Image 1 (cartoon, rainbow, N blue to C red):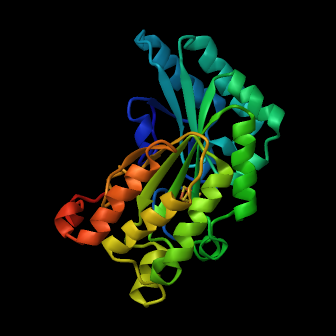
Image 2 (cartoon, rainbow, N blue to C red):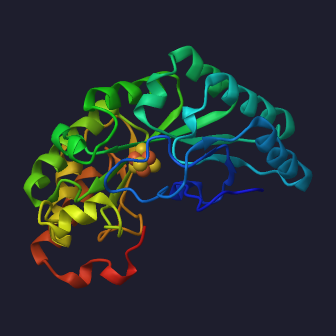
Length: 291
Ligand code: SF4
């Protein structure tokens, strides 16, 4: 497999084979994100991708899942994605699920029929970064989508009957926007009604615009307990039909795995106990946090 640069994938794709179909992120301007810094975006040619698929098929191993990288592989034109997915289906007929990162604009560029076509070819899950449900925070982090576009994109994925996993980031609004960020994110997640929610906590990466904002005092990060208050606000405002909320990513101070709505009250109770005790020993130590 020929990978270019660092490869990222969602934690839930740890067992999947990564097939790189694009390099970098077509947007690459979110102020907190360092994932694809220094990578010039390009779409791989079909012959490059085909070579990798042929290699996988030659292993003779029944790989159950594939994740299409990099940052927003759904940006590929429909005909290119159909060509890749069709070839995957032909060469790896046992493949159970294909996953992909997408941003709201990538999704909205496709109509429902196109998403359904991809679903029929094996696209089983779309990972979408909401980051925040607050319009002002989205503007500050230079997210390339509005709340309305993000909700519309989420609904289109769901309508195509593709699983939807949404990522949010604690701490992103700083102390100033903390409460609004948490509450609005919970509310917008409720509108999206995803199958999975992954909460991360902001880790400031050197060289990112967010680092400069912190250095100049424009952004003041919440304390670890402040981030847990945000977690409480999000979960408190989250009403979903049936979703799995996880804050077990290595960046978080308080790892949780919550089946919603069944375990919501239990999770809130646990968070409130931690907030009441304010004991740092109950949190993941700073040196264990990672991206
Ligand atoms: S957060 Fe996503 S859309 Fe934004 S720059 Fe990073 S990879 Fe690209």
